[in-house]
Image (cartoon, rainbow, N blue to C red; front, side, top):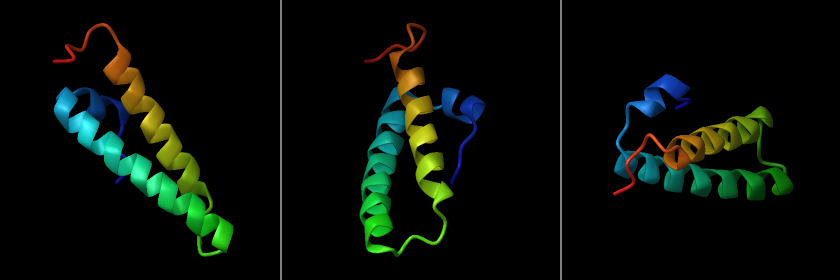
Length: 67
């Protein structure tokens, strides 16, 4: 589910908003699971955070029309 920055740049703002919403929900669930000791791959939290940051960077860039 890791998307590269170039793949994300090709998405529409609506698609990016949906991915962002899904990733934020996934991050929240991972954080709860990490506290409970259920997460097997601790690096996954970092990957989701990175993906969220990349999406926000694209959405906040002046070249994207946020309609």
